[in-house]
Length: 275
Length: 296
Image (cartoon, rainbow over all chains, first blue to last red; front, side):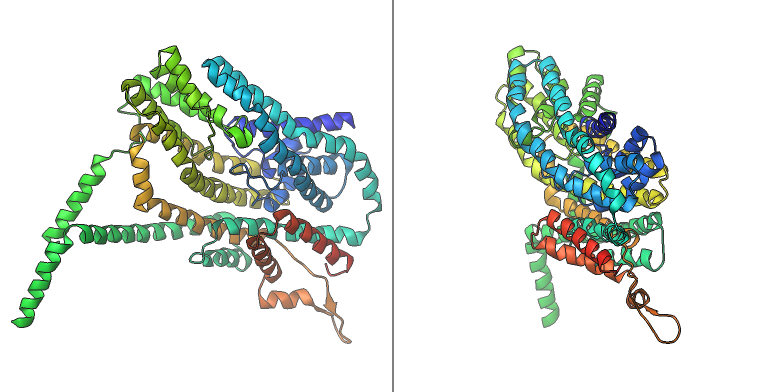
C-alpha cells in the first residue's frame, strides 16, 4: 500500500504545486486533476471520467479570498486511485470522493489559513534583508513546504483507507449502489446552487431558465449555448453603453449647461405660449 | 445636432483623450518593457505560498515587484525600505493582480524621483484596489470563465473520458487569463494610480459585472440541465397492460423538474446561510435513502 500511497502523494503534489506556483492555471480542478491522476495511476480515460463527474459537483467550490469550502483535488486523487487500483465502481467512488473532499478540507483550511501564518516571520525577515535572494528563498521554500502539506491527506487516505475500502466493496448491496447513483445525479444540483448564489440577480435570473430549457428541451450542446450567450451579452452591452451615455449626458446637463439653456428654453416656451 | 449637444460631445472627447489607457508597449522604453515583462512573469508566482491571515500574498508581491524596486532604487537602504513596505498583506485575484503591480511600479518610479512623495499613498492605493479588483476578478475568472471552460470541457468528456476535456478546459481558461495578466500589467503601469477610481465610478465596472453574471447564469442553467439527473423507478401497476411509470409523468409536467427544484431548494438553504457541507452531506443521505427505499 505504501507504493500506492506514494503515487497518490505524487499526483496530489503535482496538482497543488503547479496550481499555486504557476499562476493558478486551474490544474487542481477535478477535471484536470483527474487527468493527472489518470497518468500517475495508469488509466487516463477513467481518471478523466471521474474528474469530470467531480468537476460538476465542485463547480461551485472556489478558493477565493482565503475561504475554502472543499478540497476537491484530494477527493479526485482518492476516487481515481480506488477505481483504477481497487476496482470499486464509479458512482461509489464519486460519492466517496465527495465525502473525502469535505473532510480533507479541514486540513487544507488549517494549512491555508492558520499554519501558513507561522511563515510570516520568515517573510518579514526576507523583507528586512532587502535581498532578492532571501525573498526567493522565503517565497519558494515556503511554497514547497506548504504544497507538500496540502498533499498529505491523499497519502494518508490511500495508505490507511485502501484496505478497509477494498474489503467493504464486496459487501455493498445493490440498493446502496443505486443510492450512490442517485447521489451522483443530485450532487451537481448543490454545485450549481452554490454558483447561482454567487451570480444571482433578480433582473437577469431568467437567463438561468433559458440555459436550462435550451439544453433540456432542445438538447443543444454547451458550445451552442455559449454562442447564444455571447449574442445576448453583446446586445445587452450595446444597450447598456447607450444607457450609460444618456445618463452621463443628463448628469452633465444637470451640472453645467442646464440652468442657462433650460431657462432660455423655458423662456422660449413662455413666449410661444403668450404669442 | 444642436450646438449644445455638440459642445457636450466635444467636452466628452476631450475628457477621454486626456487620459490615455494603453495596453501596448510601443511607446515605452526598452527598460520599461524589460521590467514589465519581468513583473508579468513573476506575477504567476504570486501565491506560491499563501501566507494565511497574516500575509496572504505578501511574499509573492515582494517577489513580483522586485524588478521595479531593483531598477528605481539603486540605493541599498531605500531599496530595503521599499521592500519592507511591500511585506504587508496583499490579496487580489491572481490574474487581475498585475494591474496593481503595474500601478505600484509606476508609483515607486515617482517616489524614487520625488523626495517629497508620500509613500503612504502607495499602500493606500494597494489597499483600495484589493476589494474592488478581487470582487470583479473573482466574479469573472472564478465565477464565469472557469465555469464556462468547465461546462464546455465536461460535456466533452463526461462518461467518455476523452482527453479533449481537460485540454479544452485548460485552453479556454488560461488563454484569456494569461492575456489579461499581460495587458493589465501594462495598463496598470501606463495609467498610474489616478485613473482606476475614475473607471470605477464611471459605471463601466457595473456593466461588466452584469454581463459576466448574465453569461454565467445562462451557462449554469445549461449545466444544471445536462449534468444533474434524477430517475425514479417507481411505477403504478395496472391490471391490464404496462405499469404507469412515474418518471414519464414527471417528464410531461416539465423535463428535468426534480433536478431543477432540487437546485432551487439548495439555493434557498444556502441563502439562509446553511453550511455548504451540510447541504452536500444532506444530499448524500437523501440519495442513499432514495436507493434503499427503492425509489431510484
